[in-house]
Length: 225
Image (cartoon, rainbow, N blue to C red; front, top):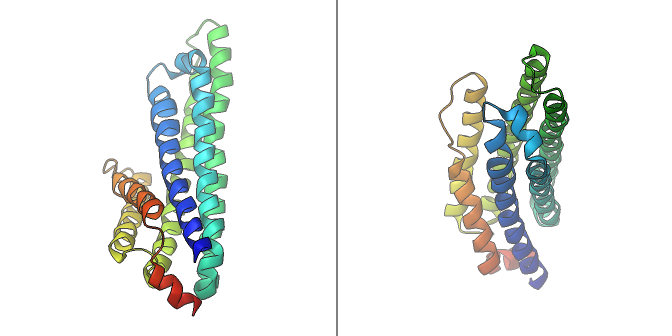
């Protein structure tokens, strides 16, 4: 039981790390630059910020894989196939995260060449920049889809095992459905805004809960028996 509670607290810390690094890396460091009209100049002028943002995004992906690896021995005792599926989705999500991170790094090189050329009004620079932004967009959509599918499996198993209060699991299931629906609709041009905040708040709450409370002791005892 002490080992399982230690795992719960580590998982809780990883949830907090993953969300904080994502908000800082993607939201604060990278997207604030890439969303600007003169991003081809700003990327070069803020190279350290861009590289730091990509590294933070990778830490976010590593944290999610770490969560799946740590919880796999607990989940597989009752849901072996689903536990493997959950781990698989997290690994695919991490690969898509890497693909998403390539775009800012390639844009950094393009921006440096653009600035060195005197910021000319040449369509090839603009076209290539647009292509790299599109690559990041689609890779991020794949991150969102694989994330939400993995979250659906994750919270279903938590709900069935009763390792945490079930209202947290239900909250997470609703959040995962919202993220999945929002991502698919956005791919078809229907942008409903940042509905991912529901999932973000859920994972922050879950992270704090696991650090403070750990897993449901009675559920762990019953599972061991």
